[in-house]
Image (cartoon, rainbow, N blue to C red):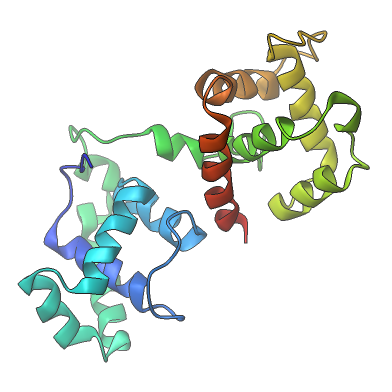
Amino acid sequence: MTRTNNWTDEDWLLLLQLYLRKPVGLKPPYSRPVVDLALELHVPPGELFARMCSVANLETPLLERMWQKYGANPRRLARVAALLRSMRGFGNAEAFYSGVAVCQTFERDFLPVGGLPGVKPVMLVLILDLYFRLTPPTMVARTPEVAELGRLMRVGADLVVDAMAAYRHLDPYLRHAAPRAGALLDACREVWSRYGNADPVELASYAAQLREYFC
């Protein structure tokens, strides 16, 4: 796995703090706490999960020392983590990371789509996965799977239906009339370009992991 080059020894403390959150242990790679820390550290969730496995196995002397010092004292670790966060970039993270090459693709996936408050690309990935499981006549708000996905993502079923309409337009096998042009269609086009022709099994596996983010 290609690893980012902005990882520091202090970052292990933040990861250890996450590991010690109840229930203590490994957290799903796309659970919200892992994604939030990934965004904070500019480290993809998959890489962060791999590093969390290193914490679980105490793979290095550094991790062993950290565990001995903080493993039974999460409050002490919380104070250190709070201090570390306050000092990171001396309160100016953008300047701190200026010039550092980071992978921003995953970050964009978890940030709101411009012009669509509350909508993130990861939500459109889940909708695309469901799109491939349904037939056009069932892509309506009253379909149980559509309603359930809307509830999971805490949005109205109408958003799911509108996104599926965009995908029907983008699908070369259907080419339905274009829905009203706008931010949603543009965002769906970006997601389709990445996953529309991908292996549906891989997409389904990724979508299953992403559901953890909304649980």
